[in-house]
Image (cartoon, rainbow, N blue to C red; front, side):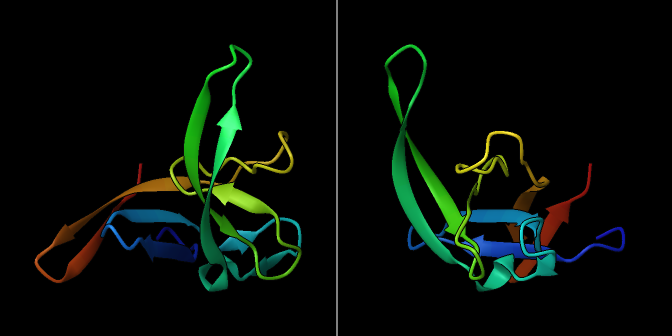
Length: 95
């Protein structure tokens, strides 16, 4: 999309997510090879939020599948994309 590699993920619940495939820590297009996991994140208000993430296969940094925010480094975020399914075709909405 627009000259970038995009990684598309589908969960066991058939939810679709799309992120840049580029891992800023290893400087390689590898996130599509990462493992999906889940965790709970505590907010400043004391509430917890369940978050799905992809862990980079190189240095294991975790990126929120919905937002692209790195869970291990608050200063790092990658692009996330709206994604949908039209019959058998994945559609990525570039904004």
